[in-house]
Length: 484
Image 1 (cartoon, rainbow, N blue to C red):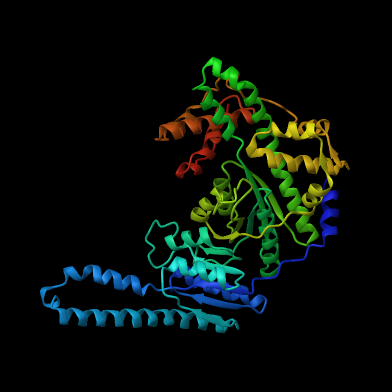
Image 2: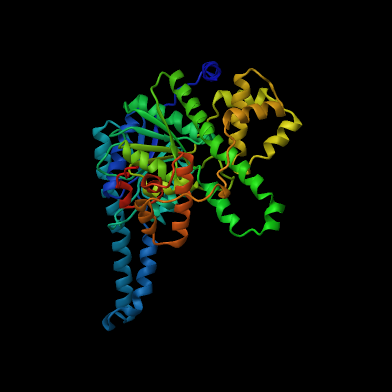
């Protein structure tokens, strides 16, 4: 199949992406904003670009707050003449003062860009900061918006500032969020999260371009969760009576999900990595790939920490997005907890194999009906997996027999880890770790995931290292126990 992908990529003549030329950066003299400015000037210098700094100040908001506090002024200021004087003084100080502060931010930013040989422009709109930033991003013809995850209002324990989060949800262009003011984008590998969506392949191309310009290595990861449906079906089994179970065809549904999702997802996500590796190879770039298992945002964050990533790049939304979604669930979580800078991309790219397959390969009615049996959440991924399988064999019409053949190749075991296989025994250490989970509902979910993990790995009982991946906090660093 890789030969087919390689030929498709080569035939497409993929052009490398240029570095961003028109960069908008939010400035407020905070540590993260200062790092954002440094990275903006560095990126703009690559392609003879320019940086525009923006600092919005809400003078009207200060004026409104002052009027709300007038009733609490000392008695001597409640005379009308004195009050009008105070209003005039306050308005003048706020209007001029905030303008002076804003110009001070811009002066410092212009100095940084001047040293990098990059033109600097100033924006100082009045109004709510996040709104003005989003409006500038929408109307200024910019390629990229850079801002700090935290501003001047940060306190210990802060994960992300309100301005950053509001802008990230609304920005119409790519956004780079600076999370660590002490590290540059290339102080570690560029990690790309792939899920097979056009935006994930789009951000892969962005990462390869950045690697070319900045010299940092690129890692591509794909994360899937083989435990969710096992947990869901075990919980459902506890509420269905025998009649409802028969009507729902519970065991058949469970086996179908186990077969398609647990066996098939790994190969489907592995195929995303295969496509990514071929795209990189045809672009003359090196790419490290790794398939991750677990809750995607958690597994990706752990990987980024393990490799000491400088930048994590991912699509703003993923494979399961609907048109109204502002940000995907995994992107939202990683925006808050990633151990490195985060690039959220809107760029879409459909790899040549998928594009060619969609246009040249047809499905019989029977094949479409068979695909419709796949759970909805995995249907699009299954469709692409079948397309890749069929195209590699040279077919242009997909029949139900070919769907069966592809399914057998993707899911050779067809096994089911149903509850009637019996409960696994737990080691003392594993049980102790489970008991340490204080929330009852969370403890039940961890128990089911750990048992599923142990069964998948063919273990005779649940050990510590089967529980450890599903328990957050300091226990993640506990070493695995020995097994008799």
